[in-house]
Length: 142
Image (cartoon, rainbow, N blue to C red; front, side):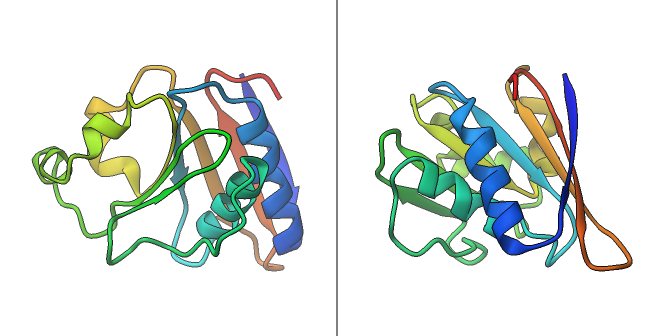
């Protein structure tokens, strides 16, 4: 299924993150796609709040993977600096795809070939008025 949402504020983006994660089951993989500054980490913050995680959610650009404990384990990955599937596998990231938690992956394009077939794809586009158009595709019903 494909859904399209308009997000005009950070709160809208956070609420969308909550909504998407509330529809997910254990082992869900969510691919967050969009340009720098599109709102991927804001989406992740909403997802974390939905799971009961209250700590600060920051982009894991330099750490690659941030782990959080909530109602389900959340793995927030940023693959911006990863250049191949092999690099990703060396981080141990592939094991997290099937760990029983939820994986949010920013810049997942580099590992498309190993993403599970039921991955949820979230594409965020910045509009001229700075609002966001967000398309959600995959194996969830919203």
